[in-house]
Image (cartoon, rainbow, N blue to C red; front, side):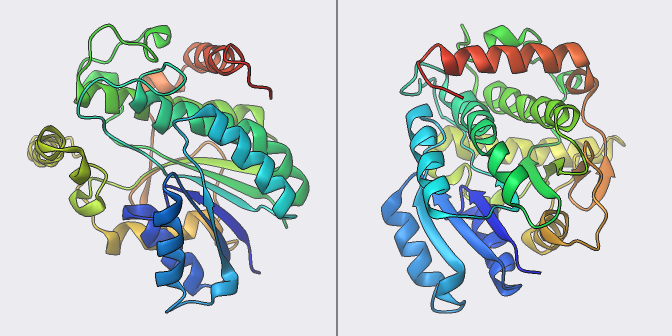
Length: 301
């Protein structure tokens, strides 16, 4: 059965590779990204290989709450079906930058914008999906505070006093993990399945390559960290598109693959989110804070 899937950050890296996989299976894909020119170019290029009627390009800058709100409004006007939501867009900021809403840009892009998008599209998923809907939240196996210092007070995540690219990225991925766990508690599993997914450390994704020298250094460091951790017996797997994309496709759209809400998948196997992400207190605090961060800027739910 053909599904309608929305993929954020869909013009490069894992997002683009997932889009190709979904199109090859004849699913309809909304290709959403912040650069509309790049979106249109991506659609044009993909149309050379896949059916053009299966893809729609739309502008979505998840770092901007106004862009998220405008996107959700346009989506509801254009589409009568949404089966799967893949929250993939992500950045690593090479230095401390603030979003247009005044929040640290890594946190705003990787987590807060996606939080707001889900809140706005939850009713659409519930009412229009053909069968149980799915939400896939892209995370990372390096989100555990026990692997290194992450501020465990969620109230400091959106406006950190000190900035470090590694910590900012890991904090945003911890927020993603908490979000997935919280949603799995909130939503009826018979209607919507929510899973956290770590694609593994894939150096060629492009997530960091356009961010300058420090980001390039960062990607080398996380790969080195993965190799050292594996040598010490606590692996943080290095993966590849050939390994990650088939499994990601499976948990996103394959009905015959039983996906349980609240599960955390690491590349191609079931894993667990960190203890901190599993705490009900952490989930409740972050969901309350996120609602406040959005509503305080005048945006409605």
